[in-house]
Length: 149
Image 1 (tube, rainbow, N blue to C red):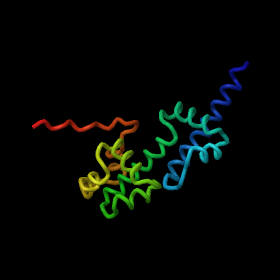
Image 2 (image 1 turned 180 degrees about the horizontal axis):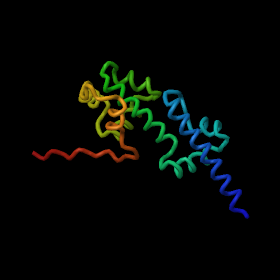
Image 3 (image 1 turned 90 degrees about the vertical axis):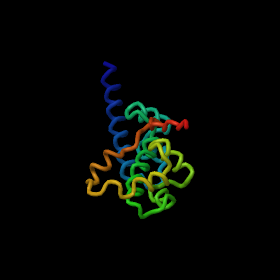
Image 4 (image 1 turned 135 degrees about the horizontal axis):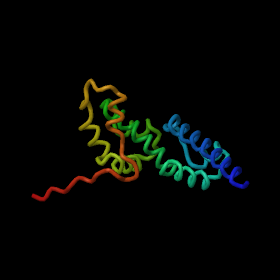
């Protein structure tokens, strides 16, 4: 008999977690932190972080940064904004943190990505380009092999 309330609580948490994820997807450029997200979901910050990681495989902060980096990649591909402007446009307050996280996820610094990607896929629909260039999560970007001359 105790499994029903437990299952009900789990499902209620999943609904809340999806709402948090949707809010991150929608408001990625706004100042968001785990405390604010947790308040909005009527959860403690610790509970939100643990449950979010169980449900989606990464912390709310990592998910937020992935969304920001995805948008930054699209803006950098356009080639008409500086790396600093892109950093602030996607909601990052620190250029250093943005550059570090971008390099971890994409495998190259944002300045290199901008230079190499600007205009590199003319005629490719944006929805296809976004899927093909989606950043790798959880520090899985390949590290380039060193050249031994």
